[in-house]
Length: 506
Image (cartoon, rainbow, N blue to C red):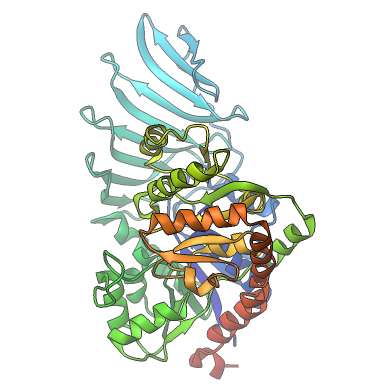
């Protein structure tokens, strides 16, 4: 009897990162080979049903994949399309003023000169949230609504920090079923009280998640847990009556991410606590080899790289003309991505090619810092922070090359995507991924990390040497064979079907 793949991840979203994208693709492919595939998510999402609906409508989530979210599953009462009717019951006599600075419909309300509440709607005119104020203009609470107009969460605020200190979650008839205390400084969840029939208390939300996962796994026949997020590893090791596959999406090394003896605690605990039926999937041979140098050769260690999505080949048929002086990167604007180094290197590119453009797609906490750096380097006309894109392949295809400057990666899915549409990549040589995917001086360039001169020179060469760029572009397309869907699917199905207990029951 075949096992049932059960993917455990934080959340799914329309605008998503590499780990979520990989989980969706894997679930869709596994749905072709197994009778049932589950995705279990454990993060609260205000518009959860809207997200799942959009993913299915966009053919990004196979209808055969069953998605279960913890917060939705714990609700005692579920009645979809029940519209919340009480949001305006106290509005009589209030002065309503539209906030013209916001792109979404947003309103402030006053009662006899006192600011009492703030409402924001989405661009489909669906109520998003309501902030309630006291007489001193402090925010007292925020009510959040789902796409059906139901109140789903109320956040009670700390008057000093203006941050949540207690959250209440509601089912679809407006009854609170879950309360989580929140540290107003760190915003970490604390005491957690579940009230969906029988009251149960947990020290942290993590205890609730572990309890829920245990119960859901018991309800699934022959479950094989596939865990992508390291935060779930410890919880999963304590779940009985299931098989487990742990996928290492990131470097298992501590800073500076180069010394193979400096292993992060969460990965060390995983590697030393595996049992015979647990399996670990690395995305590159080099990372697996580094782990085995410390922990010894292990038959439970496997390598299954990310594949090129077969649909990417459609982009090659479009024959889009690229801009020979455009560089692109797709990355979160976070310190570990070192976008500042990419910008500093690009200053050297502009010195050689004054009309060169660098388009940066992504969002993150460093956006303001990067804007300041762009201004300081006098690159306002050359570098653009373009925000998130859900069409990265189109942006790659329009560029001469792409660039990767991360401190570390687990694989570098962005490198694979860029090559798959014929766009060469210039990358730092980091652990792990770039030199597993890029063939130096064949379809891209791999330079020593931190060497901004070499980085800039690689970009300049691809922007100015059209014949070399064209050769690299043609070579890059071979990535469709090197990292094919067929190899990926065979790797996963062989691994899942290798579990002895399930195979013996056939």
